[in-house]
Image 1 (cartoon, rainbow over the protein chains, first blue to last red):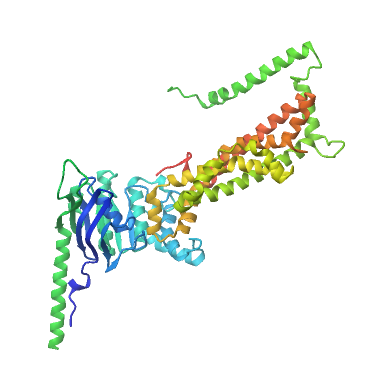
Image 2: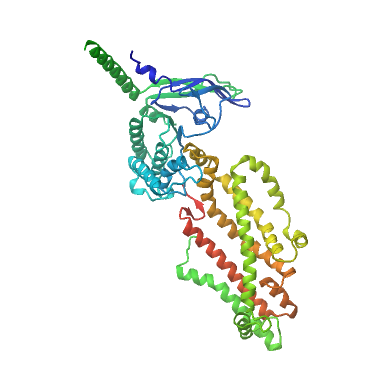
Length: 273
Length: 270
C-alpha cells in the first residue's frame, strides 16, 4: 500500500476555534487554521488586529482563552521552548556576545544545563556548526563583532542564524524587516526564501507591508475584524478573513503532484516487474 | 553652546579651579600667619609638608607604625569588605528580584522599606549588637549601600528587553541558564556602575563609624586630632581620602571599559 504524501504532512499546526480575550477586550475570535509542515505563511492586517497576539500564542508566551493550538497533533507547550524559534523586529540578539558567541549560545544551552557553556572538543564542534550557519547568512567576516557594531540588516541576519542553528520546527518572524532600508530588505527576502527552501522549516511571518506579504511565502493570511461596532470597538475580535495560496505554494503543489504521479508510476512499474 | 574647547584648552580650563583654590588658600594662610605666626587654622605649605613627611614616612615612636599607612590600611580593609559584601548581596537580591516575579513579590517591598531606614540612626543598634569592633563598621556600610545597589540592579534587570528573555527560552534556556548566560553578564557592568555611585556614601558611613568608635583609621585620626585644632594633619588626610576615592572611581570606570567592550558609553546599543 502506498501512503499519500498528502496524508504524511497533513495539518502540522492546527488552530481549533481559538479565542483570545483580555477581560472584555476580544482580540481574536473563532480562529481556525490548518498549516502543513514546510509552509511559509505571511500574516498581514492593520495594527490591533491580533497578528502579534496570534504569534505570541504560537510562541507559547500566552495561552488562548478558548480553543487550542496543536503542533503535530500535540497541544503547544505553554512556555516558549526549542520547538519554536523567533526573530523580533529588534532586541533579538544578545548585546554582550559576539556574532559567533550569539550563535554558539543555542548549542551550548542545549548541551550544558548547569553552566550553559561548552569547553574543549565539544566547544570546537559547536563553533564549527555555528560557523556553518553564520556563513549561510553571510556574516562570516563579522564573526568576532558585537551586535552594536553591526547594521540593522546584519543584526537581523544574526537573529535568524541564531534561531535556525537550533533547527526549530516552527520559525516565527515578527516584522523582522520592518526597520530596514528597502534595498537591504530585498536582500533579506532572498536570504529568508533560500533558508526556508533549504531547511524546510515552517514559517509564520508578520509584516505590515502587503507587497512583502505577497512576494514571500506560500500562503497569505489576512487578519481582520468580521464585525465592527463603532460604539464598542473592542467587543469583537479579529479572525482570518483571507487565506490565499501564493506563487511559491503553487510550485509546491506542482511538485507534490509530480512526486505523487512519479511514485504511482514507480509502483506500477514494480507491479509489472 | 556649539563651541568646543581644544584639548589643551580643555585641560587648562579643568585645572583652573584647582589653581584658584590653591592660590586663595595660600593668600588666606599668609594673611593669618602674618598676624599670628602660631595660628593653627590655615597652616603654611611648609608646615603642611613637614607634617605630611612625619605622617607618611616616619615611624610613630610608641607603636612603630607609620600612621598614614596603618590608618589607610585599616580604613580600606573596612571599606572594601563593606562594599564587597554589599555588591554580592546587591547582585544576588537584585537579579532575583528583577527576573523572578515570585521573588519580586516577596522581597521587593521589604527592600524598598529597608532602604528608607536612615543607617546613622541605627548605628547605636549596630554597636550594641556587634560590639565596637570591625563588624559594626562594616555592617553600617552594608546597611547604607546594599539596598541602593539591590534596587538599582533589580531595575536594570527589569529594563532588559523582554524579547531577549523570550529568545533565550526559544534557544532552550531554563530560568537558571537565562540568569547566568543572559542576565548576569549584562548586569555586571551595571553593578560596577552602582558600586561606583555608592562609593561616596560608603566613605561617609565609614568615617562616621570610625569617628564614633575606633582605635585607628582615617576617620578616627581626623576626629582625634580635631581636639588640638591640628589642621596640618586634617587637611592632608582629607586630601588623601579624596585622592583614594577618586582613584577608586577612576579604576572602576576603566575596569568597566576593559571588561565589557560591548557596554558602550554606559548603555547597551542595539
